[in-house]
Image 1 (cartoon, rainbow over the protein chains, first blue to last red):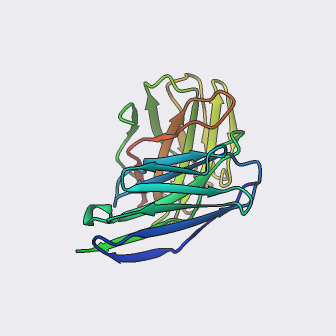
Image 2: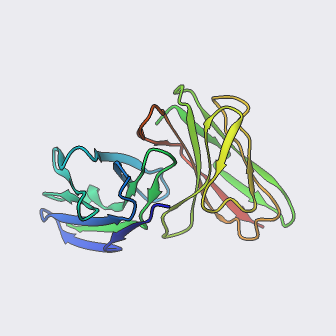
Length: 111
Length: 114
């Protein structure tokens, strides 16, 4: 089955800096890659997703890039703000079963 | 994701007891999922269902059971066979249609063992 590796496990940045979180996947048939943000004690919330027919997608300060050849995808957050502090999860799916999640990255934005 | 509800918010289980977690959605989604999240960990798939009266085991199904008698409902039973049930349980739903669609999560149920 699919295996999704995520790193780093923790990331601390200064407010205004950029943050990058990287994930790799094992199943070349995977075609859907969402990113979720989870605040403490809350449900994961989708922040952006990308499908395999697209190499990059942006939404304001958030962008995701996908390299199908290398089987990795990354989340980029620019101009970080304290409210960006949370745990971020990447995930992958072939469309035939549920999502496989990475282990999460705890992002801390220092004011 | 406001269309997915889970109850109760907190649940306490005594040793040897079966407990059932509720998940309901009014989004008309075909697929529903149960995940377990341990402190500081990612989400692990317990069971999922893509159609009424059918469900599939996920990666950690042992000690759990589910039913899908209605499209809107996907309850999860934590049986006494699950020896370490303390965790945050998340239900999710999505549409299906040939490719993976976005999963929306419920607010979760925190299960604690007395």
